[in-house]
Image (cartoon, rainbow, N blue to C red; front, side, top):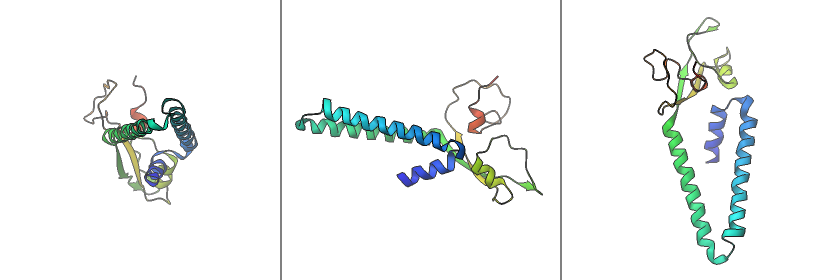
Length: 148
C-alpha cells in the first residue's frame, strides 16, 4: 500500500505542493491515532470490550476502502505526449503542468506525462460550447477553477 501511495504522490502532486500535502496527511494520521487512543482509553477501556474496538477498526478500514474505490471511479489518469516542432512544444493544449510534467516536456524529457481527470458528474453548470465533456478543457487544474 505504501509504495502505491508514494508513487501516486510523486506522479500527481506538484513538487511545490508535496510538503503541504505531507503535512495534511501527517495531521490526519495523527488525528486518527488520537481517536484510536481515546476510544481505547474511554469507550472500550474494559478488556471485555476489545471486540468492539476491533469492530470499530474494521468499520474504519471498510470506510477507507469505500472512499478509495469511489476516488478511483471518479478520477482517472490520462497519459499523453506533446508533439514538438523544432525546439517549441505544441501550444494547442489547454492545460497546466506541474514541475515534473514541465521537466518531461523539456528538451531533456520524453514529452510524455500524466494528468488526473475528473470523470464523475459535473457539480457546476458549465456553459462552454464544445463537444468535450469538460467544455474543451479537461485538466483538473483548469476544470476546478470558477466559471465566469
